[in-house]
Image 1 (cartoon, rainbow, N blue to C red):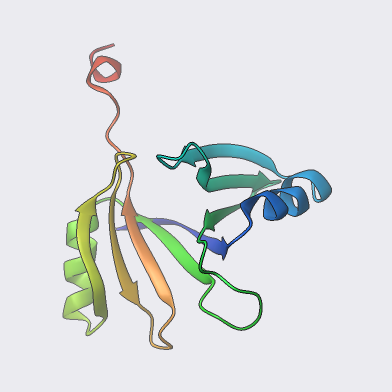
Image 2: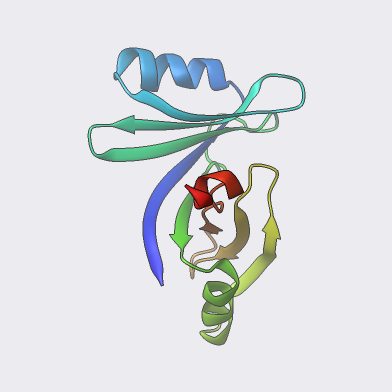
Length: 130
């Protein structure tokens, strides 16, 4: 049912985060989602076999705060959420289609940490024909 897990960090200064993770640590940008203002809102980075996401949140502040979540891919987001609901998990956001094509829900782990359950976007119709 579940296939992949990776952390997502939240920052108010995505440029500074990229300078650290990409430029200093040598991570490679594998995906970038641009906000309507043209600025990156989310960047996926690969470092060796590890993967981390960094999301921009202008309200994020330094120090202790909810700036960390886990992303877990599932084969079927809706079925995965129902499975978690049956197990007593708190569902914060029901599965919703996202602008980048994936379906995503937000749940809480037993400690109140955000866990995003995502379903990968379907390949474009022309890619399925070939």
